[in-house]
Image 1 (cartoon, rainbow, N blue to C red):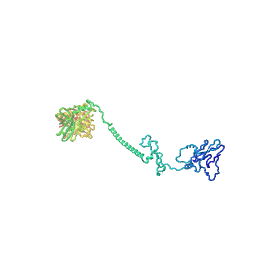
Image 2 (image 1 turned 45 degrees about the vertical axis):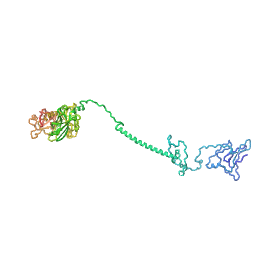
Image 3 (image 1 turned 120 degrees about the vertical axis):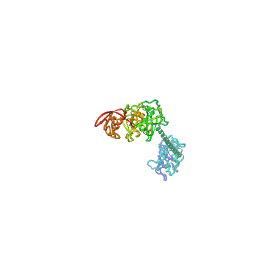
Length: 572
């Protein structure tokens, strides 16, 4: 016999007081019958929802899994109507015994199946049905988190430590999503709201500021130290004290023919002259001729002393002495002075200027610009270079005619009267003039050397010095004619008359004895052409009185060669 089932329940199940239903076992030979469509009036015909998670008592029957329900409806289904009595489930019959009813509370509950997916926190309804509206999450900002291994101050939660729940923000913060930040580090919300984490952040920022400041100071100090080190390296080549290497001195004498050897032997006999007089002062050089104190120099150096001036001589060792003028000759530009009471003098040996060759090395010694004992060197650039110097008086009495040695050894004002020596330290010339912009000039009348210096040959100087020492004056060789110094042709022309109206050719003189007459032109001396009257005088004065000369003379277009003996003229 089938037990009647409550209205609205599925076949074979009877709801109990808790909303669960248990299946009934069918009797042998019987079947479960469905409720009749015609029910008694007043009976609720609405089919209640299928209970969730209930199975039939018969283990042979499959387990029915209820579909998910919409929130709210599940709560209604879980509560059965209060009017229904507790359901009883008939126990299975054994041997045709009548059905035994077992209360549902005494039956073992079935195991609830696990859902296939994690619970949906948003309670999203099944697809196709509308769901509750949820506000969009706020802007998610990534927050930097400490790297692995970074030291964290005491009190900082360790990695993986659960963070206490953040208090819900008020309405002004945007509801339950107001402070949600999925990228924030644990404890970030608490740190932002103040408290100890915020203080740690400020301390970290202050620490970073101090670190940056220290780095800047270190950079400045490093730059200053680097600049100082670079300066020391550039200027001194290192940081320590500079000590320069020096080779040991080489003691010993220099080669006699070297400039140093020549200077060592010559300097003791060279003196510096300071002259003062009525016409002003002068500075020059001289050298010792003998042990009696005779010193040779230029006439233009001591010229102011002839009017009562004084001459002071300074020797190589620094000793000084007074000197007197023995004699001088402006035509040769030579003079001799003498010191008295001085011992230990070093006379310089005299060489032979006729043996000098162009290119021979020479050394010039003097006091240029009052720089005593100055040594310069050069070579003989030319020989028999006719030069004239002086002429400041205007009457021609102070003009010097020199058949000079030309040298490139530097000669400057103050070198006048100094010796020009060869490689054996022998005097071969007396420095007298240098070339200036207007031509050859005495050294005290020019600005300085341009590499063209001129010296009086020592052979001529020796003869003049001997005459000045022995007689107080020097003689000039002459041919006994007066020259036309204004003649512009080639050669030296004999003038029409002498000074004062006398004849141009001295009666009974050397020229008169060789039939040289006024108007004749002398073109050569000893086969050497002469271009002017000055050159003829220079050639004649380079010889001694009594020397014989061969002259080429032109008259009326015809040339003839004559030989004469030089006469002597007393300049006084």
